[in-house]
Each structure stands twice: as structure tokens, then as C-alpha cells.
Image (cartoon, rainbow, N blue to C red; front, side, top):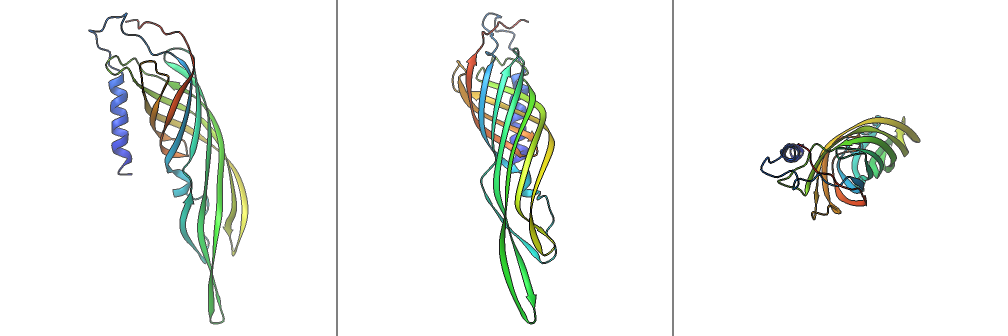
Length: 222
């Protein structure tokens, strides 16, 4: 958490700075970014499900470490106009909850180590708002995303009583994120992004963005 708050402050500062329009720049020079279909591929940090297991260990079980990969996400944004886009996302997450079970009786005891494989595949839809043109830092584009996601979760060995069982659940979660992109050039064909917020997946996402198609740009009207 101590790393998340400074990152949030930086992202919000960039987004607020992106709302400023320098009045000394002429209307013909201040062009809005081209609205496009954008493809984004990212990795998440601050995994919700790693820190919030969907079950409580019964008596006789002891929690171990968690191993596996970071959450992955893919998103497409289809620009409706210069400030709004529709988004479609896919999520993938897989890791192992490791734990142990202690058996004892008649003066003997032994420990059995087990792993519960957690896998998540989900999708979501939403809307993205691009606040304004940033004429001072034209390669930076702030954005805010809202939407809903459906997560399909499967687990192979959920502790239950003195044994384990498989489980499958489906959860609908709200999505609210704030972030920004940095494009490598003025053509805005590729760049990197950072976002944070809530989607019941990960708190922070970083990744790569590429433009798949181009729409004709317009002049900024003041």
C-alpha cells in the first residue's frame, strides 16, 4: 500500500495537468489526438484474489505461500469521438494457493502439503473518457474507465472439513480506473500506459498500447 499511494498521486497529477490548455497556442496548432481503435496488453500488480482467498482454512490446515504468475489483461478501445470510447476487456489469472494439513493420533503425526490451483478467465465492457487535449505534453493522454466485468473462477482443491473439493464460481464486479498513456512519438501509434483503480483483479496495471486503426483528427474548438 505504501507504494500505491505515491503512484496514484503521480497519475492524478498527470491527468489534471492534461486538462490544461495553453491559451497562447493557436487553434490551428492545437489538434486533438486522433481517435482510434486501441489495443492494450498489460500485467497487474496488487492481485485481489491472492490477498483475499475465497475460503477460510478449517482447523488442522495451515496457510503457506502463493506461487504463480501475475494477472494479464487485454483491452480494445473503439473511439466514438474525440473524448469517448467503448471498451472490451479480457482477463487471465492463474496461481497456486499452497497449504498444509497436519494429521495426528496415537502418539504420531505427519504433515501433508497440498496446492489449490486457482484460475480465472473473465471479460468486461465499459466506457472510457479522455478528458482533454494536452498541448504542453501532447504525447501524454489521461483517461478514466468505468464498466462491469464477469469473472469465471475455478479452483481444484478448496479445503473443506478434513478433505478438499473442487469449486467453480462466477462474479460480477464494477470497474473504475484512472490512468494515462505515454506515446513514443507524435504519430501516437504506440506507447505505454499506467492505470490504477478497482476491478477485483489488480490495483495497478502497466503495459503496452498500439493503434490498430486511425480516424481523421479535428481541430480543437475553443
